Amino acid sequence: MTLSDLGEFGLIERIRARFPAPQRAVGIGDDCAVLPQRDGQESLVSTDMLIEGTHFLRDDITPYQLGWKSAAVNLSDIAAMGGNPTGTLLSLALPADLTVEWIDAFLDGYAAVSAGVPLLGGDTTASPDRICINVTVLGESPSGRGRLRSNAMEGDLICVTGPLGDSAAGLKAILEGVERDADVQALIDRHYLPLPRVAEGLRLAATPGVHAMMDISDGIGSDLKHILEASGPLQGKPSGHHPESPLLGATIDVPSLPLSPELQRVCARLGWDAAALAIGGGEDYELLFTCTPEAERSLDVPHTVIGVIRDLPGIEWRGAEGPVAGFDHFRKP
Ligand code: ADP
Ligand code: MG
Image 1 (cartoon, protein in one colour):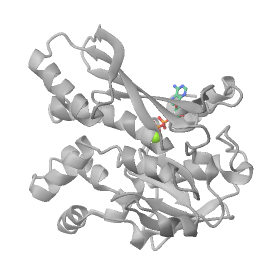
Image 2 (cartoon, helix red, strand yellow):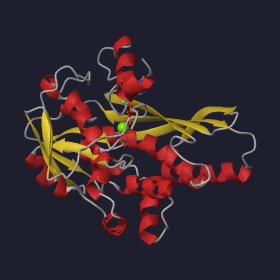
Image 3 (cartoon, rainbow, N blue to C red):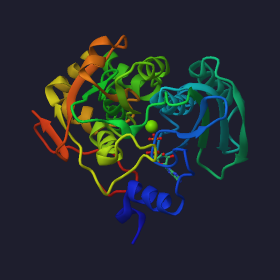
Image 4 (tube, rainbow, N blue to C red):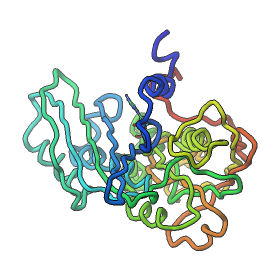
């Protein structure tokens, strides 16, 4: 058996089975690990890796964009818990022929999206050819405030904080060498310069009735499944992940998925399926959350209601035209 049989999530599950989370902590399975502190706060930690050839093409992404994206995808995992980022660590494996100008531009992008979150350390090494970047992000949240993936409840509305599919369409445009008019460029920018929804996450976590939350890295087709699997009959339990008992499901109203005007125009022009990109495409880094209908009415965070949590397993894609899938790093297409 190889990793392509096991799949990315099968591999993570295999690791998780050997290393159970310590008591009172949230370990493998959520956007961040959550470690209770003595002072009524919880520490949040998460890490993410970007590899040349897998996550970006050196000839296409600018160093500024790469620095931005490296920090942004990590800050997004703190946002996904409703936490406050307190610092990052940056580890770099770099080929010796990179220019100093390249590094400076990388750090400009990293600093710009970090917006005052300090860089506290890291590690540096030479790489034989490919660039490899690993960022670890630290954050904090008042105890019990952080929003897990495992708290979705029957009857919750399912919401997202912004448009879906732009990043996937931007990636498709890069890979297919589509001519870059203003609309296509806007989609590519959404792919390379994602905005971590930190302020939105903090406001959502402070709203009673907002239950489960995560950031959209693999596409809602895949990410919503994570919320449903983590919630289920043991909902609210901090240990996070109960794939053996997925009793909750969801109905998603596909025509209500928020699509940017740029995505709609590019899809109309090139014959691309906007809904498929919005559902199956990843790296939007918007927040996906569930909340009571009362909480939804009082929210002061821009959002779109896209569906509802039901007590029937599976996801019903109401109004979808084709099959629906998310992203997995090891699965064969
Ligand atoms: P995200 O997209 O939010 O960054 P991932 O899909 O990368 O999350 O990971 C899902 C969960 O699995 C996270 O809790 C992460 O910490 C954990 N995880 C991923 N890879 C590993 C690994 N190699 N060892 C331990 N935990 C891992
Ligand atoms: Mg995440």
